[in-house]
Image (cartoon, rainbow over all chains, first blue to last red; front, side, top):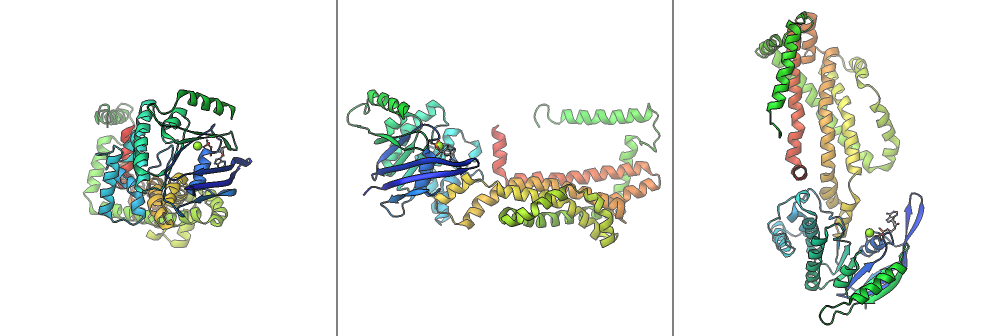
Length: 239
Length: 255
Ligand SMILES: Nc1ncnc2c1ncn2[C@@H]1O[C@H](COP(=O)(O)OP(=O)(O)O)[C@@H](O)[C@H]1O
Ligand SMILES: [Mg+2]
């Protein structure tokens, strides 16, 4: 059974000017341990999709079912959403604090998680003093602290400069492999999607529906072919 | 203090005092209109040497701080009520806004009627004036609690109590401190006005008495002491801010 089974999912937002059909109907199965990238024009409901999976928003119709019953879900947003009044270690250890892990064990785990994402030595910094890339590393570490079965990434590096983004993407690939979690990555960048994902789901314009799905073949050096990316880009333009 | 440190403000203050002195001597102003600066300084030093002055100062500080404390407690309570109970907000927030428009000083005669000429009247006036900044700051601070931060905690399975402690209260604090900053100065102003009108003690009362007896330099001396006291009150909240909000100081440093 799929780790995430999405059936007939729609979401209509109530905006001030009336109902906005943001998403769907959408059907999608995501296998356990799979890394799926979701791309699509802005406003097509990608964030809405992730929020529905995370349970932060309720579907208008349809269902999201999990193989694991109640999986642990970690999420990283485009803005880091660190709590400004907790230092880096406090933010990274927040899921543990909420779960009632004792202070000492929490601190040790937070330190280890910071080290994992390249934040060693920044444990006692305030979020406001971090660069954009550093803050996103902390947000990633916080999501990892939940020991997530499912990791939802909503354009996590979109606000970063190109060089930092490339580096973070390379690191993210390592993290995904290490965690073995099921990963859903929303991104604008096709090359990013192609480099990270097992499958790329292309959504249509609002309300987002599946326009096409491309399976990446990572066998051999180089992995993906530029032809496929160009093909996908065309598909995106048509969608 | 960057860019020249304390030098520039000290120079500017000196220049203003020199201008004052020049106005009095060259402009030929009567000392009953504007006493020269050295007379004012001498008068305030003289005042500070008298125990009676300290009693007046204590009386003013008591009215101001008691009024402030009441305003802070009641204001936070009302602010939480408005922010958390929607029908209360709909029913009473328009009243709160309308009451902002009332010149609270105009209520002084009423308070005298109800509470007499004692300390109770002065505390009540100080509290009334200081109340609304606290109500408004608490209400908006709680309402501003960011959905994006709540999302993060809900994702982690946080209970409402945990979200209150980890998101709502820390998020409220900066707003609240801004409200308290306004409140303490309003409270001081309220206490002073009450002393003018309804006082038998307090620095405001001392100003009135000095002027009635035509000791103008002394009246100015009292104003100087009042200013010093006001500055102490004013310094209180930034101190609290630095203590309670180290993460904000960090944010300022960065930019
Ligand atoms: N809470 C909301 N209320 C009203 N409209 C919303 C809300 N959230 C999203 N929308 C609208 O739904 C559409 C999809 O939004 P979103 O999922 O954020 O798109 P994407 O992440 O793909 O850019 C947009 O038109 C957006 O304006
Ligand atoms: Mg989005």
